[in-house]
Amino acid sequence: PDRYQGIKIVSSTTVAPGNKVTVAGSMAGKNAERYIDAMGYVVDKTTPGPGVPPALSIGLRAVGGMALNSFTPGVLYGQGPNNIGTYVRVWGKVTQTAPALYLYLSDGSTNPDGSPLADGTKTGSTDNNGIRGEMNPSGYIQNDYLVVEGVVSLFDDGLGHLLRKIIPIAGGIHKLAP
Image (tube, rainbow, N blue to C red; front, side, top):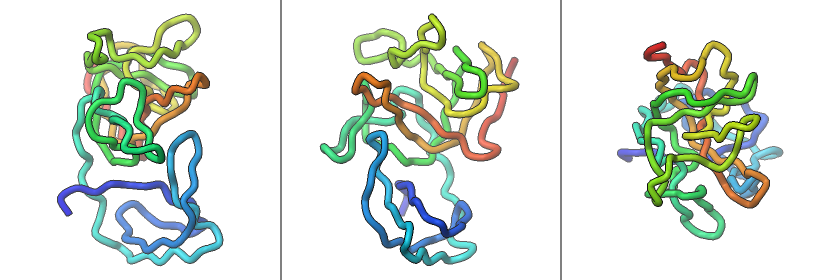
């Protein structure tokens, strides 16, 4: 295939990125994100496998995408194809940090109504503009420019909205400028 989609696998079997696996299990979900629960099942792996496909470069507005169906939700203000679970590369300026928890990254994208891409959450009393990077932001400050490679995911804001986030891979954060 030209492009891979991903789904989280919960298993006690250790695998490395790029391993080819055969999985049996049950579909499950947490925080509106689906995964295969393979606990108690055998996960067969081929080592080293085909390798990790390259990250798909996308703008922040496209992260998450629209709902596919009632079992595959999109994100608030989602645009374009649903890409939850996809390995991507995004870039932008750090707009907000929350110590040891996350940072927000903006590339200047807007919501469909023309307002800045934001998810309605706040860090302290400040609006979070951009998308969340679920990572320890130590070493990064507002206005740093980053390229982040990771997996598209989502989180629930507690009000019933599913919001965009990126979970960086190890070594997947690159600082471009102070």
